[in-house]
Image (tube, rainbow over all chains, first blue to last red; front, side):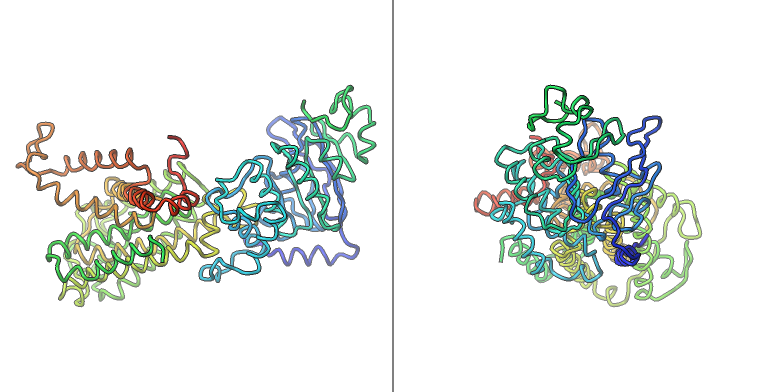
Length: 274
Length: 347
């Protein structure tokens, strides 16, 4: 099925007041008899930074995959910039300004850092018939790839095959793959996973330096990173949304402390599932 | 110019000059067959190395080209007996093969790995029985007496040059794709199809397009083969020959484009010259007039495959790459960074 994302964008933009960047309306996901996400409703405006928290098995990644188009909800609707994306495949999302990262690194290991960043941009613009003959050395995209790589301290590794990079460098590139598309809605699934302290600090800086109009949805077990970046926090437990508030409110919420941080936690350094 | 391009150019020049000093048998029989088999194997190596698709249907597309030309050109015997001229038949056969590759590609594109392999094998088996049982197009007896165009018939060495030109076209096309945006996207699909979909790529469409492109060259090899051979029967597109193509690609190095022709050279060379070694035919008590029978050839090629796979998992071209690495260590470091390890890293 050919899907024209430009038409989708126009459709979304032509409905009067600017629509929310992301709207979830009563989203439920059920695998057989198991309810993983239960009637979750959520709205994210332009430039909002939202951390999605919850213990392991709470349904965070499933909900994330519903937004990204990798999982189709059993019930409910997903709208991105006013466009109903519930039934649309994941490949339509980049055209609507969505970029995502994965909990487990998913990079093209046989290609260089530069080629990975190039492909991220090519995917957003679409492969046209002329792509068969035009050389891959495409100045503007190559320059942008280089700029992002340098920002993530990967500038000297542009020609290196991704499979040769260290885990920390691959996690950085995972973020870079999303940033290089200049997204409106950035979905990050545990970006700090497996990073050293220094790398986590650099990640936090990168996220704080995002342009103000970029909307961010972040799943993160590292509270230090999550609380530093987010201006709103929602907490999922057993598939349901149990809290929606500011980072300072989440620290003092007794229910969240009980099911998520643990009563003795709350020092800002606890990690979920621990 | 890098060593790889330099070596290919040298081999190319050698092949152009070969008829000047090679015997008619070596050029017209052995090397023409090597180039044709290399051409169809290159379509498989392209799919495998750039798209991560190990297909068993390329040999079917190759065979369908032969049957299509046979049905259109022949005026007697089995088949449609349309009596068309060879050149228009070639064009129609290529259109049929490309369309068939598109159908097989689009039906197989949503599967990967073992499922893709099995699905393409299914198509290969369907093709074998189709031409065996549908006597309108062939029947198990096959088709004979299919003449090539007079241009090739009058001067057999021209068919060698035809196969060489088609091989060069395929090689340059596949190499050009490798660094094109389409080729990069295809390699991305090979490595991480899920990520590529989330980046906005239509993964099945990319795979289908690659399969169709490869199918065109497999069909081209099939047309050359029927012109060279003059006959075709369903047995020649059965499971045995289908696997032979995979063996050729693996022997040569399924991740290296040049390996397609190198594998074909080793395969054809072993087939022709090992038969002449006295005594080999009597291995295991099978005395076949002191020459190597087909049954023993399969054993020998199997042992050869085993030897190459153990010594060099990425085939004979991998051996050449290692020799080059030993001579120029700096180049080898760079090569390691861009080469997929077929063993998956297990030593």
